[in-house]
Length: 154
Image 1 (cartoon, rainbow, N blue to C red):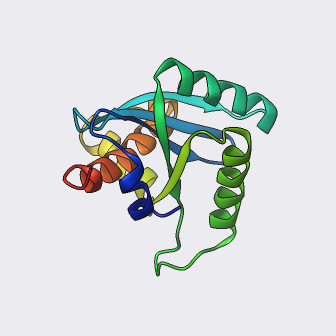
Image 2: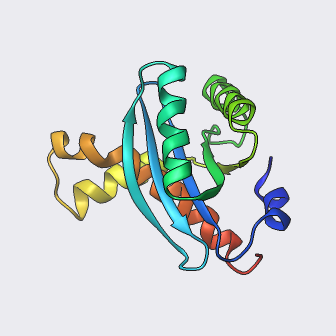
């Protein structure tokens, strides 16, 4: 669903999980709408879907998550490519396997690039250290954008 469709389904004290799904990892961040701040949580090293979903279900239960915000990798011109369809397929599988959770997409263009630039320029992290945190920070960036959008609408 689009983010606008999520608004009537949320309350101010709900918690959201942000996901940045990639081929090898899933960056995960968490936010409370009441606080308005997204926090990087973890990076899931992808094995196979049946293993990945168990970890996501555990996080949803542990943090009492109401909705997932999934980063949608659009092309720079706003069109959808192969990666976009892969993420949509992943979200469809999540919705099938976790039917009681709401899932919405958020434009993630340049989120990983933005966070990598920040880590190089501001945090001066080595490539190895950047690789350890980039995916969960990209998820945080995605989720924070959605939380900022939802802040005055929920």
